[in-house]
Length: 138
Image (tube, rainbow, N blue to C red):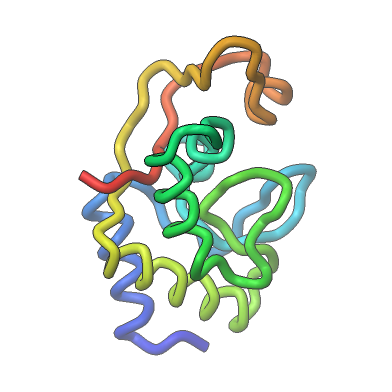
């Protein structure tokens, strides 16, 4: 079970970044998880995966995934951890603390566009592009 300090840090990250800490959520096709959402989508770092040829994207992707936990959702690039038990909460805490220590924030991207010829899982599932929360370093 997370201690008060750890839970406070997760809530602080959510408050400071205008996103929601979800302790009993689902991702993909109903898989239980804990993580951060902006609106109805989990905070993403998909842009850095799809722009893999860009050196800055490679650097940010490496920084995000360096501390990515074992249970991180692996079918897309979301800031969430599979399962809702104490171990998953601890993994989310450690990952979030590492991202905060590196200076990551969440920004709102109004129109998601990852370049010509790319389609994200979210677009395939919802049929739309829209506002998402995205990790970045200011």
